[in-house]
Amino acid sequence: MTHMQKKSLWIPRIFALTALSSTVLLAGCVQNQPPIYQWEGYQSQVYSYFKGDSKEAQITALEEGLQKIQAKNGAVPPGYHAQLGMLYMETGKGDQMAREFEAEKASFPESAQYMDFLLKNAKNGGTQ
Amino acid sequence: MMRRVLMMVITAACAALLLAGCVAPVKDLDYTAFKASRPRSILVLPPLNESPDVKATYGILSQVTLPLAESGYYVLPVALVDETFRQNGLTQAADIQQLPPEKLREIFGADTALYIDVSKYGTQYILLQSQTLVSVSAKLIDLKTGNTLWTGAASAMDQNNSSGGGLLGMLISAIVKQIVDTATDHAYGIAGTADAMLLAAGHHNSILYGPRSPKYQSD
Image 1 (spheres, chains in turn yellow, cyan):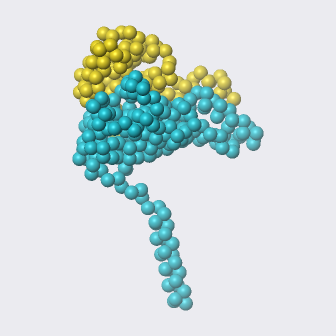
Image 2: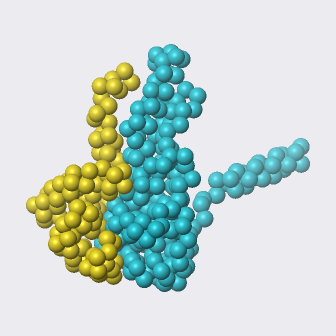
């Protein structure tokens, strides 16, 4: 307890790791199988978005995560490309946005209707 | 004498029956509608928040994707979905959760929607300890039929019983922990555990495995 002040900087990271590992452990206990997806920082970046953190920093983190997934030939989780696409859209990078929404659609045909809705709206000048 | 022994036996039997009644297992969920529906995708709506902590909605919402996707479902991008609601003037979870299922299906193309309610979220200071508690419940609705496919609830808790340092030491450490936990968003970690307990497939009364899991239709 007396070391709390000194350690305070580390606490968020430790909690994030604990949360992730406990989730993975729980999932592991009941499923007894390797994870389907390579998650990287997807969920913590979604939380950063909700908290209103810097969008440039979120883009950098998600781009780096994507490189790590590709380097290991892992599976990109549902929503990852779409999240990155939204950040590109909100920072005025329309071409990159479209590419990410198309990538989400290609990986997950279940997303097609929603991705088409977003792409159509973007083309018509709407934001979303 | 015999009668007294008999009475005792009957009393014991009654007590045993009563006790057995108390610990009766949780009722099994009826999965008939779930199995008939075979959903592939889940639209997670922004959760209702009954707790006093404004961070609860997003703490829970940001961590639902992992357990649901690892259970075999496509989970629509939660932040983007939230943003679409905002662009259409819907900022309150209560209003969003009232939208007609047909409308949700038309825009998002999802098979199902998950309605979450956060009843507890945060660190409380109780006597000589502080505890961080997150309680959530949810129901999965078929967007084609409006049928309820599944309901569930979970609580995750982290408790700090500090010992040593005497009564005042315990008191101070509990208070310090509460301040630190609040400042560093400790509940976020507990929320991830609560989400995993609530939404991972493969245990009693859990959601069923979805089509992207190797265990699909094994349950």
